[in-house]
Image (cartoon, rainbow, N blue to C red; front, top):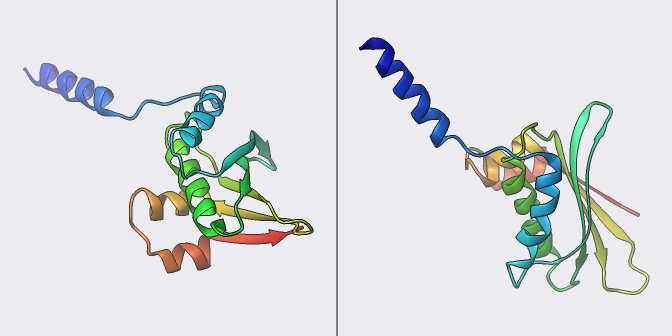
Length: 140
């Protein structure tokens, strides 16, 4: 009886677990994630790669100058939501923002994947903590 109960608990936990996808599958689903929301920024590029032993999920978006904060928030949230289903966890999310303004360069946001999930998915940290400790910006 003890073994049957153990097997049932194990089987239930396996069936209730989130599905896990390969990098190729995640990359194929990402454009659909962006396209199904009419307020999402235009996705112009996508890469999943390893750099210095860190797995990185990288997107490039076309940003509306009047909605740059919302566009960035959507993109980082999309990476966090899609990233949680990866077979191998990501270490960093990168969003490259290309503006629709002549003469304006690009902004790059790098976010710690675990900390971003703690904020956006698990709701374990505050926005202030996430913004000050988990992300950084550079411009080109």
